[in-house]
Length: 232
Image 1: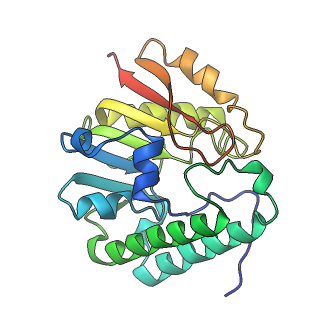
Image 2: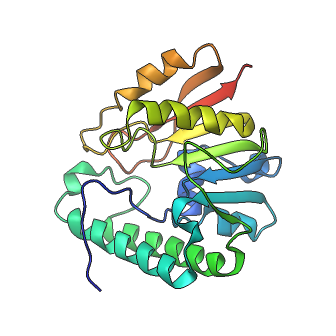
C-alpha cells in the first residue's frame, strides 16, 4: 500500500472509547441518559463499544457512504501515514493518556479494528453519511453531541465561518449540550485556536459556553474542551 501525506486533508483516524471518556469528561452513568451523536467520528471506537452495550449512540462522517473495504483501507492508510509523518516529533506530545508511542499505536489500532468490524454490520444504522455544516437530522434529535479533533484543530484549513455554522448546526440537532475537543490547533505549540475567542463572543446571545479542564493528555496544551448549552 502506498501512503500519501497531504497538509490539506482532514484525517480519518480512530480514537478509543476510553479516550473519548477522558477528553469529554464522560461517565457510563451520564451517557445512559443521553442520545449521543459523535459528529465527524472517523474510525473511532466510541460508538461501537457503547452501541454494543445498549447505549443510544450514532456516528456521522462524510466517508460513511463508502463500502466496508474502502473505509477499512482509508482508515489504515491515514493511520500509518500520520504515524510516519510524526516520527521524530515526540517533543510535540504530552505522554499522559498513553505510556509511549508504542502503546499509542497499539491502542489506536485496536480502536480502528473495532470501528471497522462494527461499520461492516451497522453501516446506515449507527453510521450515517453526512458532514458539517449541514447535518441530516431533525431539530433536537440528540441530547448530547460530541465533536472530536475537527473544529479548532483544523483552523488552518477550515475557516471561521465554517466553525460558526458548524457549531450552530450541532446546536440545532442537540437539545442539551455540545462538547468540542481539543481547543488547540495542529501547529503543536500548545496554543488555543484563534477561533475560540471569536466563537465565544459570536454565540454569546444563543448559548452558554464554558471552557472545561479535562484529564486527557496527548497533544500539548490539549487539556481543555468547550461545553456549549443552548439558551434559546
